[in-house]
Amino acid sequence: MRTDVVVIGAGHAGLAMSRCLAERSIDHLVLERGEVANSWRTERWDSLRLLTPNWQSRLPGCAAAGDPHGFRTMPETVAFLERYAEAIAAPVRTHTAVTSVRRAEEGYAVQTSRGAWRSRAVVLASGACNLPTVPKQLAAELPATLTSLTAHQYRNPGRLEDGGVLVVGASATGVQLADEIRRSGRPVTLAVGEHIRMPRRYREP
Image (cartoon, rainbow, N blue to C red):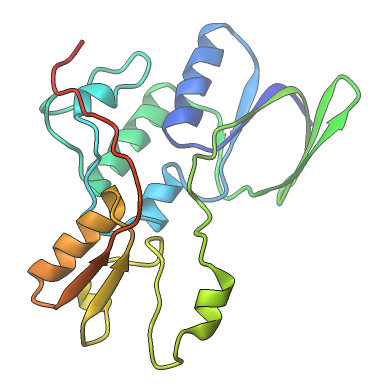
């Protein structure tokens, strides 16, 4: 099967790219391993809110939904992306995992769990930070009685075992999780390393 462009990922970037390609009448396909907004559905905790206000989360041809200075929740983000994909009639093939991308004559050969595609170009829009990194030596030295979770696996305090919690990392995710778990009544220790926070601009340019 052939198409001009294969876009991998049906999140914010993949759908925005689909809209821009469609505007230029470029034949394309969006491949998604799960459903639209899959990472938001499966790799986020229940209470997550976006760090950027709604006016900064607009997509091409779509105004910010709700309060422009509000912050979307995770379910609101999923619904927003679903509506956008439907509105732009994005050619998304869900439950299609990309297993390899190789150079080929006149473009690329894209192998998936549902067949192979040839395209002139490939756009990787699968997002960042999808693979948790846990130091192997540290993981090996943890006692068997200690439960260790990554932010991808955490959902809410109710799913944690009884007892205190150590949150490693004090960037946005670590601080939010530590705050939520502490407010649930558990003792929490937040391990802070060296990191730099980017300044936030509150006024719309």
